[in-house]
Image (cartoon, rainbow, N blue to C red; front, side, top):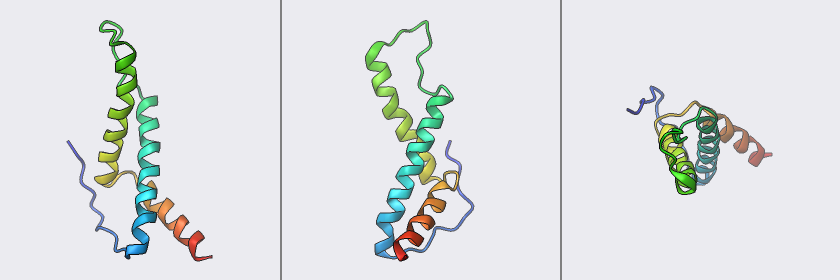
Length: 90
């Protein structure tokens, strides 16, 4: 179940889209690490999926984090975007 953001979509120019995409990817990577720390994707001890399961669970976590970001995320991407935008304008 995805949680929809109540915020309106931000208005951007074509030049800002690359910065926004980079900020969203950074938020996704951050959320992926948080999901990993929370234990999402870990195999229960009873099943023992092996090395393959360990390798591919990181892909699952990253895609889940990207879905969270596309649904509004935690607002980190917007903060990163504005910081990058200010830095670019200096």
